[in-house]
Image (cartoon, rainbow, N blue to C red):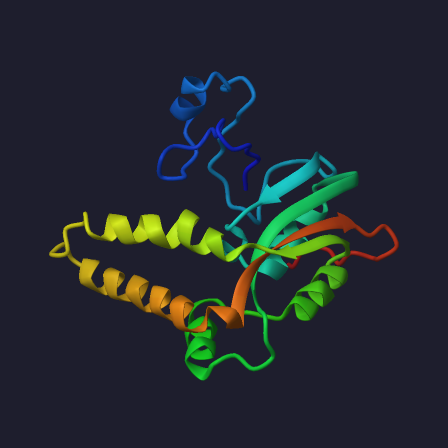
Length: 196
């Protein structure tokens, strides 16, 4: 999770949190870098007005993240996340097989239902632009692929997996997309406790 404004990121050139990077930007007093599990954060209930998780919720899954973070939001707080989701009820079979194996997707409607079950109400939702896939991710990734040592163990498999993902996006990108969600706690919903 991170809170960031473009141009003043406390993140290094690889997108990783860095005390040194924050110090170079003069923001070290405002940034605390913690190495913690996203679903077991050591903060008291209602500690945050805003939790921002952009392009990262998939590491623990949409439902576990919503359950783990609900208790952390103060009254009137908000959860700002992005999640990849189907944009059609009938995605291409190759795309369905790929995502079922990598990270099973749901539709927007199913994600809203999951959010409600976890004790949230939808404040806003919008699809991210196609340019984010290319300008912010695939184009730089493609450039970096030409710079790696393809003879390193496992590198040819990794490059093949990335090429497959890019090909699927090129051919069937209309079947799925990232979307932004702003969710707020719904004080009228009983929130289930953490799993035992």
